[in-house]
Image (cartoon, rainbow, N blue to C red):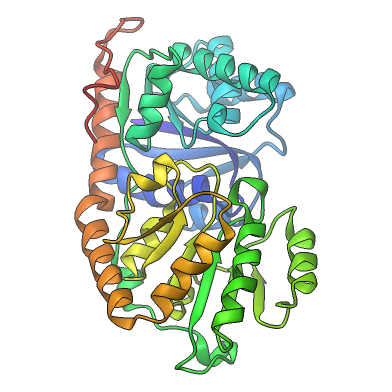
Length: 381
């Protein structure tokens, strides 16, 4: 069976990483994948190296719908899997034009959950409702996203929670980069890995760095990623006097080694789906300090596998970081519990199996049938 995956971009980010882990594994279940992306990026080459064909359109906007429809007709897939809100909307419309294969939509993070102006919020709700109405199945990465969808009246034909999966092996065997980065072995290192965009709120991390620096004079900090806020972040670091202690690395491909370098991992996001970096940090045995938002609170247990802090609470983040950096026993205990939890709860093979099972169910169902819906009260991961 042939599956066409449609995604806005194969630049560095959660969606591309998800495809990199999902598509090779689907081969073992009889599903051959190919990818259509709006924008090019590093993941295109990595997918091609794994034998996954990638076509880049150059853009993903309203004008892309006819081109997507032609791609659907040309590639003759048995099933089309749409990833993310933009691809979901444009791909579902293109699917109607092409009268193409069955559609599965993964809402990597529902766009209506972002902090948006009222008019834009209403627009995103209507768009997500349309996507879910046109799709044969909708995959949510978390129970929280499934509940939020049901709460807004989104009733797809089949709603399924399939969390991201991870192979812990690369993260348990990785060696740190302290020597290469010029950091002494005994120095506390705190880091955040993610795109420098508003949703990730990197300025809260920078401000927490300034607070922590007042208490831990030898600590060093890494901010791994790039994005439109990089200039703002760099200026804030200079203004707060921590520019020499905070290393902003840009995009890196050695995440396991970077995580092995850190004592504490931080994520200050205000909006997330089920971020892979949290699972990766836990797999590496590092305690995480992250925002107390519903999707993160679903996977990080306060005081057991990490610490949860209200979004934007600079002092709260700083206090949690200092508490972990100054208590090695607590830090190691939370890290060990995090590793055990993620290995047990988020295995990569389970994610691939559940996705393949859903594909088979969609393909075997009569076209146009209204299949039994799963409500928020009886969802199971």
